[in-house]
Length: 160
Image (cartoon, rainbow, N blue to C red; front, side):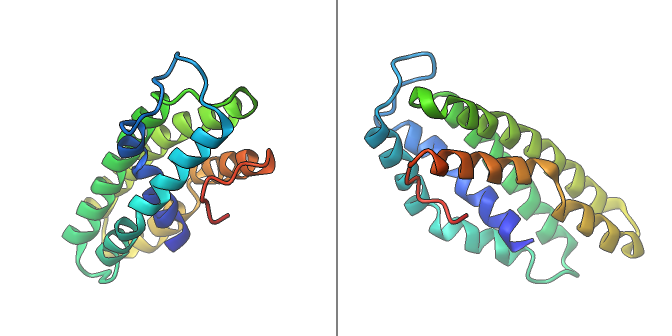
């Protein structure tokens, strides 16, 4: 679960990065160096966010804190999706970049569904729900997109 939370946090800062000199979606594609710079800046801005989200899950009996942490993570993913959509990546990483846009938005929806579940499900069902949360397919697709970008020789600051 920690990897999933960190992945959520890593995507969350794209909004701030997109506002720092990136070309808007549909504009001229960024150079490799500019794209790397924006993605690395995102990593630097997020170091504390992962800790905050991890803290929300530190006490499994605190359903309110877990729910809030999940909803905050979902909001961050929505913002990330929007911020990523505003960036025009270099042509050779367009497909994995678009996968990040699509899957971050889809993961946000699934995270909200999980938050709803933990708020209403009996305690006995929470373990099963937690296992399902750890296996959200969109997280695997996001990880694959990051690896796809890195495989093209980009250093985007990921920890894959």
